[in-house]
Amino acid sequence: MMTVKIKSIIYTLVGLIFAFLTLSPFYFLIVNSMKNMAQIADNPGALPETLFFGNYINSFTILNFPKSFLNSAIITI
Image (cartoon, rainbow, N blue to C red; front, side, top):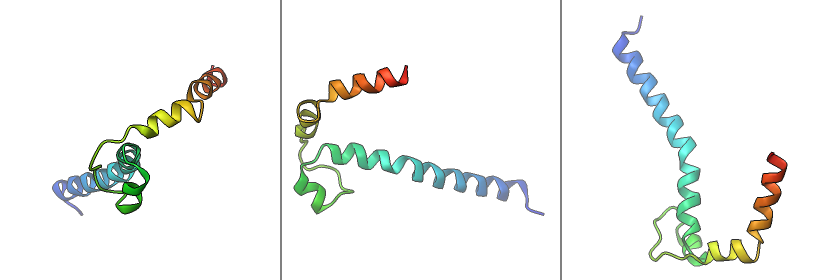
């Protein structure tokens, strides 16, 4: 029979692995959204050398983000 301490360590490790697997895509999403395409291609996991907000500007202008957001809100409600 496993002791309570070993069982607690196993649960903690499983929880940490699950948290890492769940949160790592959000890290990549946020970090890569602030890079230009060359920086993303060079090293997708690294922090940006300089902050590039052009991706946010493109999402609001080219992709017509406000209209897409409104459509999603209408469908949700």
